Length: 138
Image (cartoon, rainbow, N blue to C red; front, top):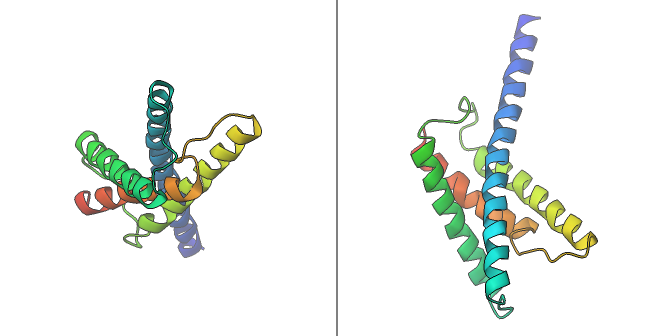
């Protein structure tokens, strides 16, 4: 029975750790969305921006936010996973799903969603952030 309890505790620890990582990424994306909205209020957003260029921009913003997070939190936020690197896939997917729901909620309330409030742009930002943390935090 002890092995099963250890397994469940380890599994729960992994899930909580990934959710905490997602939380940090969603906070970063919320800040980016706020900044984008503020800039858009001052300067009209160009609809001519290529989706590929926008994705590259969000990836770079994610990398920058990841670098800032490494500066402020130079240690793992949670106990490292036994499956090293799984957060590079799982947390961006969960973050992208959350951002897609935020965008959907805003559109249902007749508000304009910014690009990061979609699955792929949210995923791209979170991937950049997770990648930098993966490289520099051991």
